[in-house]
Length: 377
Image (cartoon, rainbow, N blue to C red; front, side):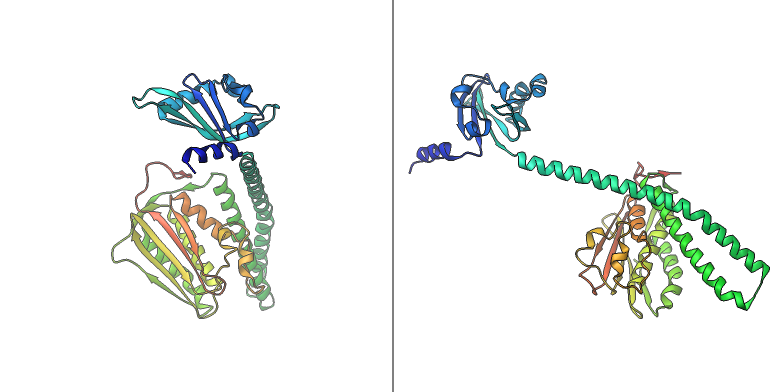
């Protein structure tokens, strides 16, 4: 079968693609393939006319039909993704392009418009956009809830702390009260730390975090983190190993926020590891970035939870064990916020439950001229 015969079959049988040929003035000279079915208009009704009737009233007013041909002349082709009108007045989402056709000497001879009905894709895009907006609204409501919860908790637990201090002052070194006071002090500190995390999440999500930049040596900051967490790891007979490069790693950042981020990662590694396990903290320099990896051989993370590890309120799912106090799961969320505010990134890798995890933080060695998203002093 010849090529011309195959082309004739294609023109006759293809229904989901419309091919429209126009002369150099934009007048339709051929109405082919799926054009009659897609637009609900016959070739007799369209040949000899322009395509204006296929465009919405808004696009006609904005001279989209003319601009489309002008763009095709200037750039050879013009993409065309827009709402178009059928013969019965209904609209559909058309996706395609207009090609400028030229003779051997470069003169414009006409145009070819090829498109298809992709209303289904447009509907999927709209569904995804609506879902994203709903998730964004839910996130905003969650932040407001965090703020209200932190505000409501701060006052009563401050009063409890004051009451504990008064009892200690009234009954100093009373052995009958010491055990109860220890519980009250410990639980009050725990709740206050949760409130601090809640308030920090609210500040970061509402753009109110202030970063106090200064020059710092990352190896010194990590050494301080390891020294701080070592007593906690000792209680579980765990060990921690710090591996640093031979040269100093200097960068600019907020030492308080960065220290808290790394503390959260190491505490997290310890919390979800069994007794006598080891935690590794490694610092390297790769392609103008400081790279810190916190690795453990603990409980690991399932593939289903990996994409949501840094979301607030996810950590309870990570625990999977009533014996582990997972808290509100704000620590990893704050790690992500702090690192990204410094222009860096954080990723997590785990081969599955029971196979440990590795968190990788990347920070730029040189502070950029513009803020990364937080106000700075």
